[in-house]
Length: 373
Image: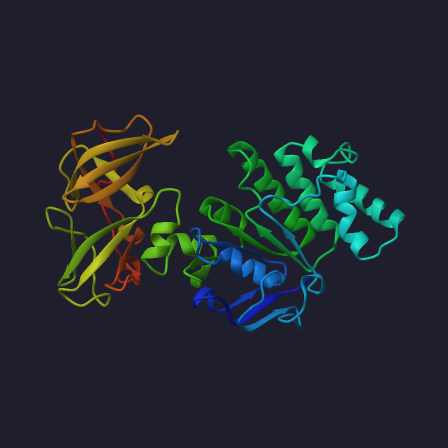
């Protein structure tokens, strides 16, 4: 097993477009590391550059104590699983799994024994003589994983390997993939645009935008303490509420009624400064009657999430969303009052960078946060 280090890594395409822009990152030995971001942010380019499928324009790549920047893919001791699995359609499951060993000139008996061992671990032992076209999507994915495992790599590189599976199968595959990585202990880099996958699987997540990393942290860190507005709005099954606000004295003023939130802004922003106020819908409380220090809005849309309901309220020209328990949702067109736990609140400056958590400024409490409709 091995760590991965990129130092000032650049991948530039003709016309000066940078898929990876001066990127330095350390991926620890045995870590499950996710690259997360929207389409076109450079995450797959970074993965392919680590693999050697793309040549870097500048900077260095190290795997363990080896500088692999100029090495060809076969010399980097990595195994890559592609989005479309890239199985050989004319080969059996057994032959597909054993193929990396054939390239390594392992004798036939040894590589077939290894293929049988890996297939059994992946519950593919009854399918060894089938071809990929005779398999389901989940089975094809396991064959691709088996081929990667059989090569005994120092690093796994996964390029959105779950994206072609249906929703239920994706959940099962996600659990299987996490367990497999923990058992093998192989350093793993996992590319995805699905933040739920990244939060569920990764030890650490790097959120990318335009070839650069916006934040690296544990799932808990990037969820609760996003470095900037981009990360705040990208992470979470329901995006964070972000509303324009201003600081007056030690109060944060937000909403159509200029509600002073029950918190202290001391040391976080200068008086009179325009800021962006952020709070996740899961940490807000909705009330059917007027409430002190509450943001008033008109209920516009209800979205059923199963055991809960996402309620959208219009607050002037801004939108505020709250998650409430099933059965407690209001009627569209009614007024609602939203209160917030200041310990779950963030402020961002005019550049979009997090100023700090309000909870770090003072001990803060709210009263009467039980919702009743």
